[in-house]
Image 1 (cartoon, rainbow, N blue to C red):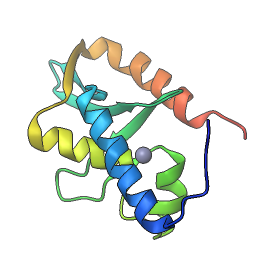
Image 2 (cartoon, protein in one colour):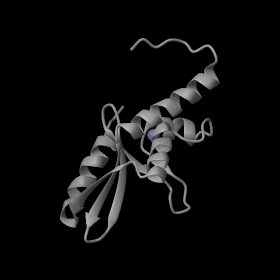
Image 3 (cartoon, rainbow, N blue to C red):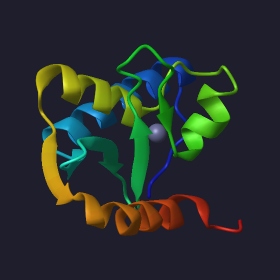
Length: 123
Ligand SMILES: [Zn+2]
């Protein structure tokens, strides 16, 4: 809605991303799903039309996000990270995420829903 051509494109995109990330963190939209008793964890960030699957890359591997920005701009080397990853990193550093606990039996259903939300569009 009301999208205008930014004048200073690089700077506008950058501050916009930081701003969006901050809003995501403040609204507790970064979620850590913890399955018990296994202790498996899955991070998501609530988006406008779906929840994005995130790997914040906390254990020395590269982070991942299922959004289009990540697939096109991050993997394409245009930006260092999408705002979901920025939000997830900020939230985990400041412990500002919501933790939701599930039983291990719920894991397959959870994963199926997350994957179908994120990867089953034919567009
Ligand atoms: Zn993302």
